[in-house]
Image (cartoon, rainbow, N blue to C red; front, side, top):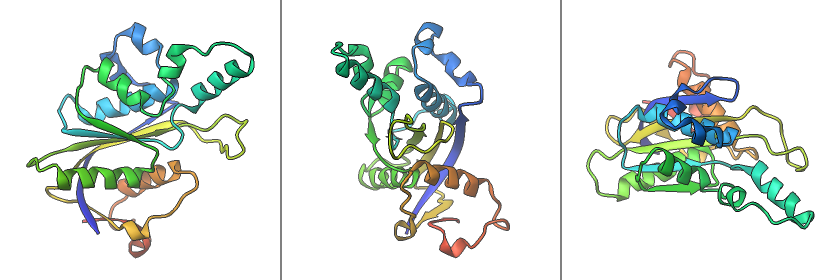
Length: 212
């Protein structure tokens, strides 16, 4: 059972405005993909101009629409755009955040669910040796293009939070985690769980997450 402190939980959705992105110059902001805007917006909101010691970026699919465009160019014997390629890799959004927000905080990018990203943050906090360290965790995803067999429609979103070890308010049971085929479901379920009061939680003994 892992015990962590979760704070500054933020959700950014595709149908909402993103005032947090005003920190990024307009010309650079316009070049960001939709999912990159959501991820950066959520991260900036959670940080709220404060610093963390590490960042965990997590997504199941990443910016897969860009990858599909590159594959389509190859099939048509066209040279893929270097810019498209450099921003299609799984850690591209982490790099964009670092450059555009001028933040050199060490980070990692995972193909993972929200809960798996929390475990990664916990492992870093337990082993880094820094007192009172904090980790920013950002999960983001959008639906795969319809051409993919496993495509499932859902609205793009990003969710982020600050994770620490002191004053734990969440218990995470790794053995009780649901193995969702579509990892975005884990993030959405956690957001709903976190908004509930203790009285409203249903069957807390069967959940991987418990408030403490």
